[in-house]
Structures are given as C-alpha cells and as structure tokens.
Image 1 (cartoon, rainbow, N blue to C red):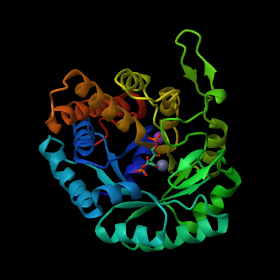
Image 2 (spheres, rainbow, N blue to C red):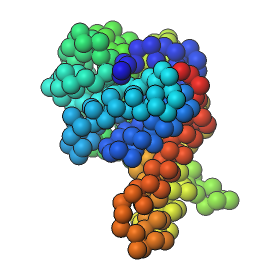
Image 3 (cartoon, rainbow, N blue to C red):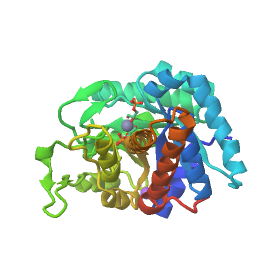
Image 4 (cartoon, protein in one colour):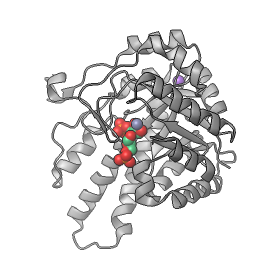
Length: 325
Ligand code: G3H
Ligand code: 13P
Ligand code: NA
Ligand code: ZN
C-alpha cells in the first residue's frame, strides 16, 4: 500500500539524494510519474493540492493513487514506495479529511499566519495525523509570488533562529523552508536576473544556501523540503511560444542548484510547473502539426510521453533518487 515519509526521508538524508514530490491532477500525469519512478526504482511522493482536489475529486484521486501502487508492481517494481500527500493544506479540517480518507502524508501550511498561530495549527494537525500513522510537513517562511491564495510581494526567508522552537513545539516530520524558490513559471522578475550574453537567456539569482546551511546546523539530520522547485525548461517554453503560446520571460530554478540541495538534508523537492509546461508544449505542438486530430489520446499521449521524459530526467540527473528501492 501507500507509505508515509518517515523511513523514506531518513534514507534520503543518509543517501544524499532528494525524493521527488510531483503534483498530479489527472491520469496522464499519474501514469507518467509512476512509469518513470517505478522503472527507475525511485521512491515518489504524489501530491494533491486543494485545487487538484476541487478539479479531480478527492475520492477519485485517492483511488488512483492506490491503483498506482498496483500499476507500479505491474511495471516490474516489486516494492514500490509511493506516498499520497496533501500539498498546502490550509486548515485542520482539510488535513483531517485527507488523513481519514487514507492519505499517508499531509502538509499544513501555516506559513502566512503569525508564528504562534502557525505553531498551534501545525501541532493540532500533527497530533491527529500521528495518531493515524500519517506524517506531517510544516512550513516556516513565505515564498515569493502566489502561495496558493496568499499573495506576497516579496519572499520572507525562513528565520534560522525559529526552526528549533518550531519543530520541537509542533512535532512535524519535515520542514518546508523559504530560501528563494517560488511557485509557478515566473520565479524571478527580469530585473532580478542577469542576461547570459551567449544565449540571451535570463540568469536568475542564486538560492540562499547560507540560510539553508544555518538551518541545517540548527537541525542536524532533520528533513528539509523545497517548494517551488521547477526549473522551467526553456525548451518547453520555446515550443509553447513557437506554437501560439505566450509565456514571456518564464524562468525557474537552475537544476545545478537543485542538484546541490539534493545532496544535503533537503530530502523532498516539489515540482509541478515543469509537468504543466511539458504537457502544454506537447499538446500545442501536436495540435498545430496535426490539425485534423480530435481524439484526445492522440495529443494527451505525446503529452504523457514528454512528461515521463521530464520526470526521468529529474530523478536521474537532478535529485538522484534512482535505484533506491
Ligand atoms: O503549490 C502549488 C502547486 O503547484 C499546486 O498548484 O494549487 O494550482 O493545484 P494548484
Ligand atoms: P513549482 O511551481 O515550482 O513546480 O512548485 C510546485 C510546488 O511547490 C508544489 O507545492
Ligand atoms: Na538530500
Ligand atoms: Zn508548494
């Protein structure tokens, strides 16, 4: 069945890699995630956001994730390790509903609340979840841009002086931090970037690895999570723009920096936008090249293939989670 993150994160920290946390809203994403992760023998976290739940129905998503464990075995993965995780839970009730329904992990995101309220809410979720053997991710610090419905003009890096108090008081199993990543396909404004003279591409500013180091010193061996970690591959952006799309100045986190983070106590890296970009690039290209197609399988199939290729690349070349089962 589904597993929680406890043993998975211990092994990831000791092994110097990160477990991929991929969001899913539909069957094609799920198939691509499971095919890539099980054939590469990688643990994987399937993330469901509140938006995904509203789009695809929590019950359906729950059964799809359970079915994914069987699908992984059919693909030849004898011992799949698959987590079903609530992404950005914003209330005790939502987290409880996911625990009750069989999710194996939940995030309670109280990062936009005053510190004491974040502690109290997170602690309440931990008490309920742990009684059901479900692991909990909390968050300190605010990511730039749109964090679900909470918009914040600039990011507020995690304060290293708060992390010991937070994990001690709440009992969380992992901590999401803010060190310069953000959600979506526009992670930095062009004026925050420099220009690569050879490629003409935007080069984003580096993540705050000094803050990550300080946090890791305060919490030795404690599982750290990075949200907003899509790299926004320019090849997908180019295809989208070439076939009628409009994504000017889309920019993500360079994979080099995610590779470096993966080798540290960062043991969960969240990727959603890259999957959306791959899906959209393949659909736009296919429909433009084959205007007579109207069977969704003919354009969702190539989208699924391109997402699978992207997931494989993340697992083998960025997070290093292959051959860990
Ligand atoms: O954190 C945001 C995730 O990418 C989920 O996005 O709320 O649009 O499903 P969503
Ligand atoms: P991206 O938008 O960078 O893919 O981040 C996804 C995420 O953090 C989901 O919680
Ligand atoms: Na790691
Ligand atoms: Zn997130």
